[in-house]
Image (cartoon, rainbow, N blue to C red; front, side, top):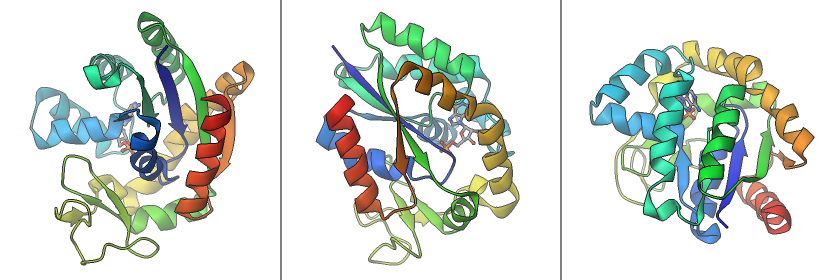
Length: 219
Ligand code: AMP
């Protein structure tokens, strides 16, 4: 049976950082809706152009578009053993759609890792986040996790840049959108007994250790 592990939490909680670290270890591809949208944007696809209108404002891309993109990605051969979902689902209808989708693959949501971080710390992190332009979009924090060569990714040498939606005007909006539209999923998954709370304010290594332990137990 395939395994599906969700990395869940507000923007800046560290979902992408952990997914990148743990994907190889778990033998599961990182499926990050935000990365998929940014990749489409870079390639100027119609999907990317549509998504941009929402992303630039810190709003969510409509559910049908997002679900269609994830459905396609989960059907790739590398996702046969399952996936580490990062940033999806983000609304109750997306969570419902995911259940239906995973049933098609004979799977289910095995574990939801809720990475909890206070708002003040989220804002600090989003302001100091830099992302690599390479296909894997490696994430840095110029204060707590800087690259060895300023402005260059340690892993593939690509240029680092600040996401448009990490600019101050959009940050608070994205956190508010999480509270309003995504936070109801905490109850949804807690009621099923698959939610695990992770202290996302610890160091990257300590968070990885918590995630590893939670997945070993449940995932
Ligand atoms: P992220 O990289 O996860 O912070 O996502 C960046 C942006 O992509 C979000 O602010 C949304 O505009 C869009 N996005 C990513 N994932 C989703 C999703 N599951 N549903 C709707 N919009 C999304």
